[in-house]
Image (cartoon, rainbow, N blue to C red; front, side, top):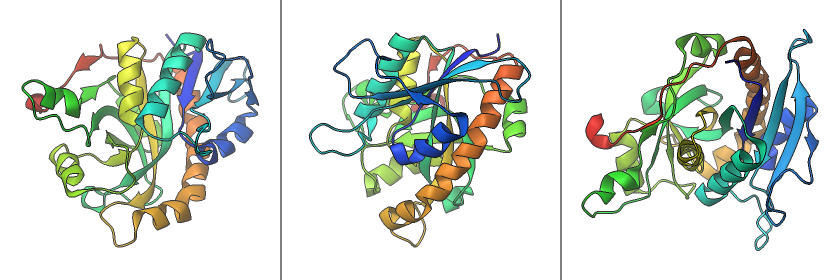
Length: 261
């Protein structure tokens, strides 16, 4: 069926602000079942082209870290935000929208837009029998519709997630081995949480920095964050409009390990 309730999980307020303003979403103080959870939920009803159809849209952020006073970026924040959103808001689909690092070697450019349904971790190294594959945690969450990809003018990508902004040699090894196109800090955690709770999920990513480029990642990220956020603000409404108009075809979520590549 067409999507009527969508949860968009993002990591940073700066990424989310243009989209919140574009759709006129309002902060909901009592959105989550757990009153102590510091996450934020901005909600609204969006009818796209004003033709009478409407979708409930909830943009969920992990909120501010109570200890350090910054956005709770990373896999812990992303996973908990996704769990809280699914439990409290019962969405038809979860979309992890946000910025990412791209790779020149795989065609990435600043501003590139990717739709992704394959996720893995590049920093969960567990060299024990059976746990190596679990650590990488490579899964496919849905089957992306080619027509949706074409309508978005996006490339199909693979997200590799870890809890560091930089990339160690070991991280790079895993990312290269799995031909990941998008390096972020929460996508795979959002994917695994949604899969465990039986909710379709995919990602929309906008490139802020070229990981294998000549500029330091942290400087390029900050320089291009506003541009990437504006790209997401333009792309997300188009994606929601597509999901409203077309039945959302999903594949049965399944485990996918490196041995299946």
